[in-house]
Image (cartoon, rainbow, N blue to C red; front, top):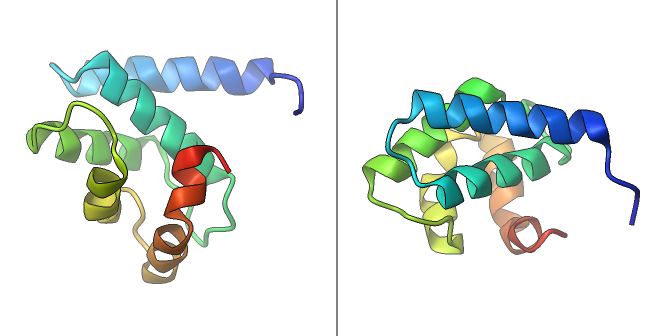
Length: 103
């Protein structure tokens, strides 16, 4: 396992701060899971990797739906809020188990 990257950790912390500010009332656990999942998406071979705006959109969607954590079903049902390209969406759905498990 590679050593932790301080820059990635700093960016993740900053994105989490932005998310909790832009989505008032979101549970910390859900916010952290969303940011972690999006970080994993950014390491995938996607045509359009999600940015902070997509992270906020997805978190708002999940929060609006009353989700308190990011389960596989909730992730699958709402991926269109964070993954915008059709081919990317298919790729992510096909690899959802690996992405959610950290693979």
